[in-house]
Image (tube, rainbow, N blue to C red; front, side, top):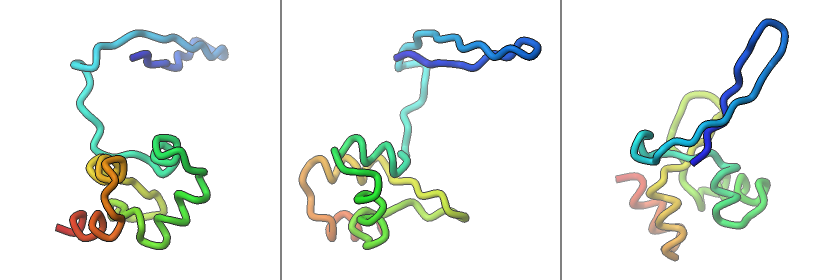
Length: 91
């Protein structure tokens, strides 16, 4: 995995990349709507529409940001019905 970090030196911005082992980073538990859209092969707007309809449940947070649990994405990829996913996410 390659991580790109922004380095500042005076007024110049520099980008530096380094390779990390997956074992060094904790597993992500949530993803943004944009990331889920990419994984599912949907447009960003369609994914937001499905979130608004409750077809894709989100992690409740204060504010406008919407995050989707990794378990929800895994269930969608496994072919579970959205209604069952929403019910299980509420547990």
